Image (cartoon, rainbow, N blue to C red; front, side):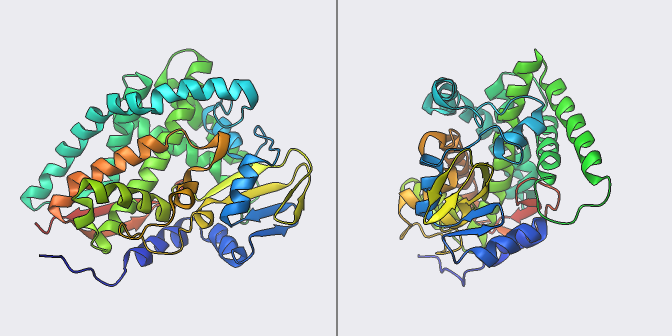
Length: 370
């Protein structure tokens, strides 16, 4: 028997994440999205796929500037931007090292870690109990990251430290009013969070800072993306597709496209360039809107009619600075959906996280219908 598909409710619920967590930023993005590239003073917003990819592949970028991804990484960990702010031979060497962590062998090594968490935490669904997917994913990502870094740290403690450091570091980059003294207090709180994260990881300061960067990047995107994808899957009754390995692979890519875990990539221009007819000069701030470039706003996720892979995969960037963790993200979400699908869960409660660095849920409870 083919299960009926309801009216599309996933997008309506997911929109609450943006409106509740970063309303000013996403109002700005919505107001400017109809132009492929839009300049507002020294800020240049890039919405369409072609100029988005062109900016990452061709425009000279200052990868160590403040108020960029690298700047946030430094503020969150107290170290350098590592994967984010290198160029040339140094960057290629670093990425070759990252391949051993995020490549097929690295993912295969970590998979038993997150599967153990998944199966243990989802077992109560079979007894009719509710499960908080956010808390589950917090443990899953913390345990996987600790194993990836080869450190003995409690999963929830590592996740909490990485999320706190990222949230405080990102706060100063968001548009909005600033109360007197807020910037100074934010800097002090960010430094304290970075110290706590590196202390938790242990080891020499520079190694702890680099490990902290990986923890911040891996944990925050995972905790943001997976619960949102689960909610969308439940609301649009996509579980039949999640039950089959072939369609699940396509569904995972579609859900990562529409959730766009890192919806905006902030960059700073390093030298004169041109982008879709708009002149750029050194010091201009680029807001590369991955959410719009990957067409997260439309269409709905559909494993039978996905958007072209080259477009959907832009949520992970492109070119030499494509996110090395894309394979890990796909594998983890694939396993989460595979373990959940037999229960055909529905969402029983959801609360937006108004403090996180990335749009996400603070709580998302589900219960089984089978």
